[in-house]
Length: 211
Image 1 (cartoon, rainbow, N blue to C red):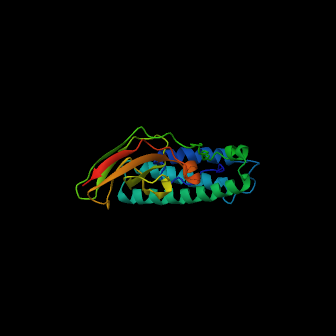
Image 2 (cartoon, rainbow, N blue to C red):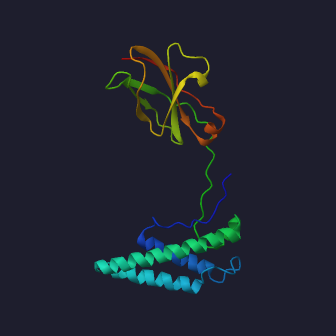
Image 3 (cartoon, rainbow, N blue to C red):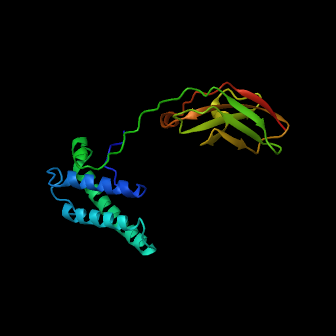
């Protein structure tokens, strides 16, 4: 199971939120006995946070130069937070109590999805060209993707002998089929657990003549 760690990547965090997150981390890391030798002093971090905040305030009605300075201060702050966060992860060694004491946000443990139920349907429609079909599968909320098995009729008894098509979406197109043939299709929602053991719950089969 994937271990929880301090999140050290904040590039997508909004401007004011970064300031709040940084201040919270600084307050929690100050004189924290769990992390006695940070690679960046918390006093230095406070200076970087304040410089970033000041540059942020100047951007409200500022110039392009003010924006460039703010972006530079943000980059410096992000880099130092990343260095500090990596130190926290190394020292904490997945200890949640220590991680929480650092003030860094903690990654979530992915929940186990298991083998998902079969989608209620797969719809097959004619494509725009010979040997082409469009499919639509019922959305499965926790699916990592979808697998479609298809074969000319009569279909093999073993699923391993069918053709397969993987899709990250519930709608799409399959091409390269044999024209003037009747095909059978079925679909399943995929998950990490299902992919690991190759076991899926498929829809009822649907037959379609491919023009």
